[in-house]
Image 1 (cartoon, rainbow over the protein chains, first blue to last red):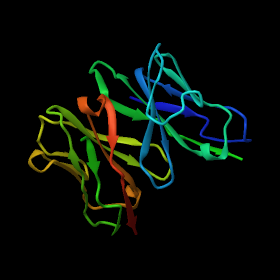
Image 2: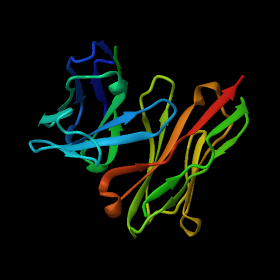
Image 3: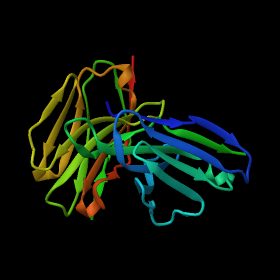
Image 4: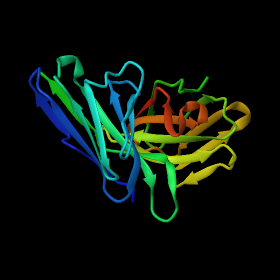
Amino acid sequence: GAVVSQHPSRVICKSGTSVKIECRSLDFQATTMFWYRQFPKQSLMLMATSNEGSKATYEQGVEKDKFLINHASLTLSTLTVTSAHPEDSSFYICSASGVIGPATSTDTQYFGPGTRLTVL
Amino acid sequence: AQKVTQAQTEISVVEKEDVTLDCVYETRDTTYYLFWYKQPPSGELVFLIRRNSFDEQNEISGRYSWNFQKSTSSFNFTITASQVVDSAVYFCALSGVFSGGYNKLIFGAGTRLAVHP
C-alpha cells in the first residue's frame, strides 16, 4: 500500500518550453501532496504544499508563476515548469499523505520515484 | 528552532559490518514525529519508520533498529550485518506544529552510506 507514481521519470526540453510532471497516488486518497526539488548530493527542498481542491502554498523564494501546481483530485497533482531555463534543471520529487486503508495515517509522506528534468 | 542534524555526511563500511547513522533534532513541539527515509541510487525515497514523541521504545525490523532517546534528542538508526543493497542516502526528518504541521517534514542533510563487498 501507499504507492505514489510520477510521470515522466526523465524529460529533456528546450529552453523556453513548459514541462508538466504528474504525481499520482495509486492506492490511497492523497489529501495533501508536496513537491520537492533536489540538487545533486543535497537534501530535499520543499517547493510547495497542495491540498485537493485548493490553491497550493508555496515556500518562500519559490516563484508560483514559474512552478504551477494543480491538485484537482484526491489522486493527482501536477507541477508545470513554465518557460523552463537551464537553471530549472533538477530532480523533482512529489510525495503524498492521506488516508491509508482503515488505519488513517495523515502525517506520513510517501514519495514518488522522482522526475529528472534537463533543460537545454 | 526546528532542525534536524545528521552530522555524518558519508560512511563507508565493508559488508557484514554493523553501522549506526546518527540523527539529532531540535524542536519546540511537545508532540512531534520522527522519520527515516532511504534514497537508493534510483532516486525514490523509501519510507522506513515513523516514531511519535511519546513512544520511546526502541524498534527492530529485521536488520534495522532504531534508538529514540528523548533526553538527548536523538533518533539513531542501526543496520546490522550491512549488505551492498543498503548503499543509499538515508534521511532523518521531523514534523510537528512548529514545523508547519504534522505532515510537513524538516529533513536532515542526509548520510550517504556505501557498503563495499
